[in-house]
Length: 95
Ligand SMILES: [Zn+2]
Image 1: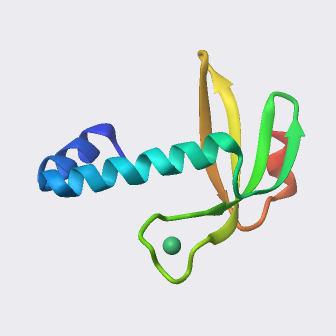
Image 2: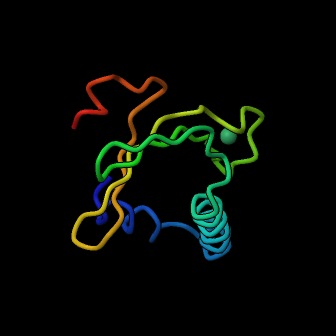
């Protein structure tokens, strides 16, 4: 999703919705940073592959979702991540 699309979408939300979204995002960031929900972690060079349980924050009955594999790496001083999927292909470890 492009950053412009996101702000356009959020601009149409009510203030109370925006507060709820902020709380949800804060919780997701805290969970991610604390490593909560990380089932497995593999390193390949400068990349880290993590199998994570995902809490969507919608209070749905399917939570947590996954686990799904994500790839993390540093680029220009920032941590970047990419969603991989339920299965970590062997090729992914060689990127
Ligand atoms: Zn859910």
